[in-house]
Image (cartoon, rainbow, N blue to C red):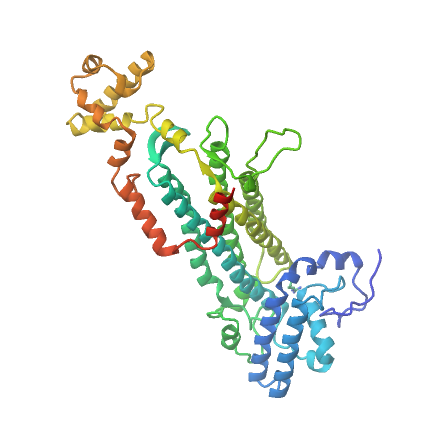
Amino acid sequence: MSEQSGEAGALWGGRFEGATSAAVAALSRSIHFDWRLAKYDLAGTRAHIRALQSAGYLNTAELEKLDRYLVQLAERVENGSFTAKPADEDVHSALERGLIEIAGAELGGKVRAGRSRNDQIATLIRTYLLDEAKAIEALVVELIQILTARAEEHMSVAMPGRTHFQHAQPVLLSHQLLAHAWPLVRDLERLDDWRKRASFSPYGAAALAGNTLGLDPNLVAAELGLTGPMANSIDATSSRDVVAEFSFITTLIGINLSRFSEEIIIWATAEFGYVRLADAFSTGSSIMPQKKNPDVAELARGKAGRMIGDLTGLLATLKGLPLAYNRDLQEDKEPVFDQIDTLKVLLPAFNGMVATMKFNVERLEELAPAGFSLATDVAEWLVKKKVVFRDAHEITGQLVSYCEKHGLELHEVPDAEMAAISPALTPDVREVLSVQGAIRARQGAGGTALPRVLDQISALRRQFGVLGSGESVTSQETAN
Ligand code: ARG
């Protein structure tokens, strides 16, 4: 087995006589994925040196110098003039190497006092996720705004509502679209709630038991914009529930997009013909010139599967771990990084697709009453005439059966035939046999009647305001 000579930037090695095997170095290395935490690591270090100074381990001049060097290093990371080397084990060792290159070993070597990579990484993942959550939230808010605008645009259009994927009762297209907005609103609430738990700082926990240097954890937490220090140093270094919860919420966002996608894919078929996707948000086939494919929706559906995998892998990693830090925890990062990258590439395309798809209003309206979707209205009309619901259900069932046998719609059954089925079925039942009448009748809380849809729109408008950047996507539609 090949051996590598002692690593220049290694953060350990004093008690080792031989060098690490190259195979072990390759296995241990996380720099190729944790480098994205560099900015957060540097922010953590800037907070940490303030704690070192206030506890008397750095004088004011040293603090000022180190702070200046850390700002310089952050700029060099940002502009790409300082990068990680393959020999750097992880983001922490790479940045210590970078700091020592600027500050020298004497001053730069003081910084690691009183902290461990264990409390360091546990803090960084939190500050990183808190930042990324904002980017994802902005994209989800945009989708909610787009759905609200699309609902307003098609406020009174009727369409078939389905249960068991069969025609059930007519609903407003606006109601159906908003039904995809509310789960996303709850995902945002989940992120808000998660943020409360994520905003605590593990710094000061050091390896697992706390530090002996009297470093002020409140100072570090305040510097990092966090609520305060964590209560238990073992928990601080070994828990990743905050990462798992974030991963669950992002997965759920993916699943919510996937369910909507499934409908869009079906709606775009020739058989349904409910929507046409804009050219800019669909793709063609390399062999079939006539094809226009809903790839954005399909990729959303596919990526939800991948995100479930990320979450499941993370949970499996956590399941068997004793306290405190175990190296298994290094595996917490790639799943959530993947989820964040996935949503950040998916949502802009998804939002654009939703903003620009064209509804075939005539087709939706035409199909709204199909499949005897007004039968419930007949039954409830009978109930209002004091027929017991059990009997009303039975009578309406017979009416549907008569229609099926004779190829008629409900309103086409002759008066005499209706009376033969039940004397309660008088001709004025036809009052409720209209789609708009059926929709208008559903005035109860959360129902599909127009006033209830308007309630939803004003609630969403109050919370999410006027259309943001989604507006630019919608206006492309007119250009198309
Ligand atoms: N790369 C490690 C991680 O992501 C950093 C912490 C390493 N700690 C240790 N004791 N080896 O978890």
